[in-house]
Image (tube, rainbow, N blue to C red; front, side, top):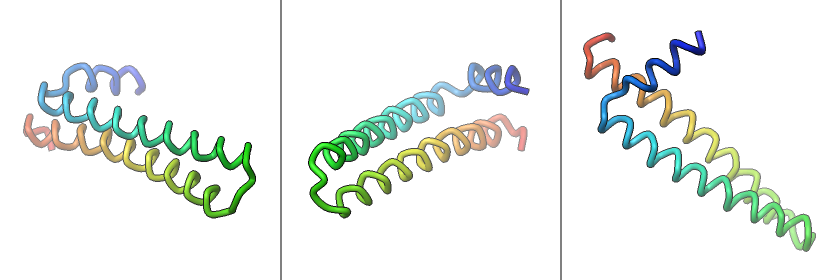
Length: 83
């Protein structure tokens, strides 16, 4: 099953693959930002707002990265008329 996912990832359309890679890089940048915010909270203990901001940014980055991958596979399937 995992091998099939990697084969599908290698056979993606060029534009779809490019959009997915940029989207995943953007999500990784948001994730790094959230980790820095959470690290600031651990070192400073200033307010719970910073903690909730970091946690929510981390959740958003994970959700967006999953959406980029799933939507990329769906769009590629529609382009190739598999779906």
